[in-house]
Length: 605
Image (tube, rainbow, N blue to C red):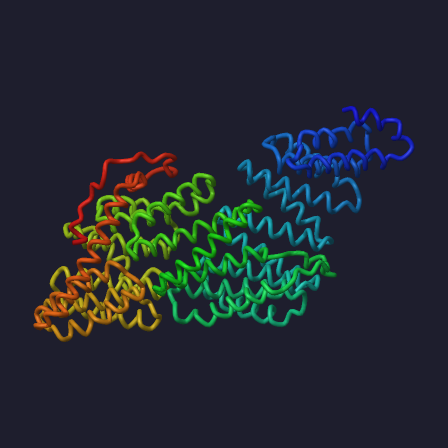
């Protein structure tokens, strides 16, 4: 390269001058707009022509490896430079930053190449020799724990986070100790080790409240702590019990948004960590608020916060390609799709399912983590358009793909409702119901899912004409759903009880159930329950001789029917409707249009 020739004669005078000049050129090219990576690499490669000392040689290999890894697809050359940086830097005394950064990036590259078995021993060696360097020791422990987590080896990840917490305590970093413990708490929640979670979260709460340091770091620890508490409650289906924690979390994020980032670095190098950027935390708080609103049946509120979160995500994704943003986006879409199906916006829900498919096409890991949820959503859509065979196929696929107990129970509950509607799948239905028996060995601790299991039993008993048994199950659902403000389950149970009393000829008691069901369904709003309630109110008022009320209910029923029918036709006419046939492999790239709706409308009218 010409620049190296021009600087050759200065080498003897001051070795650092030619190095600094080449480094300056390289950085100029790297930060150009757009970056000139090829020229940056040439400048860095020119350093080796001067036979530099080991420190400069190792650092240059690290810089080349890092540039090639982050800005090109030449992973083999990046790997070669990083391996040299790692090897040479171990021979140079007091060269920790280059040594451990090389190990960190090289292990990332190994994981990208699916060479996890090469990444693990590298990180273990780096952890072993970094104990005198608190920042790098903690960072490498976090990195190896994350690697184990991605491999679903949560036991090893938890062990490492425990080691990190104890190390942080010894080096006097209560802040990073809390980060390690909260991360461990998150994994224990994922493993459903609730007996270990409770004492750990109690300890974390004490550490967070007692720690006096940077206000943003303190509040970010509180957000992490409260997010774990809120998701723990929501996993348990305790929508009412979670409200005080959720309110605290929302107040906490408001406090953080008013604080200015201090540029003052912590005095303890082990404190040099952030859990999440402020903007990511805001999206996360929106997300858990949406999860709560969806479970509680406040669907308009869920829609409002989803819109805010998605708008924020679009802005962030213009500047930040962090994978967590796509994960947030997919989870938000999963929840709003369920809302759309309840509120009678199937066509929009289907387009959003297609959007999730597109996001999953861009990231194999995202698809691996969300394939079961995607097929579950398609199953719910199939139920809404009365494609029961397709619904069964989607739920069966989802069951094959999930290891998550709560999701498994949710899918089985919905599949049971499909078999009940079909009316001729008794053997499969009873086999499923045995596995989600709310009275005996229910598979999960979720209050919400157990209440739903009672409802499914009530629905089956209703279809079989065993009305007293149905009432017992539905009263259990009502008791549980009222205890935790599960509005949708309450509305569904009330309208089904109303239907039972109507069939039994107890019109007054039926009216006492159907009127509040209709009010609650309008508040949610739940289009199917409104349709069902209005049909019952029409018949009830006719039977009671209330002609005007019967006419009004008939008009309401007609309006709901028309809205659902139009939405049904719109959804089934979309090319995305063909997704209901996809049950294997990655999401289809292109979806062929079809000629109009082919599904029965009998269930709607």
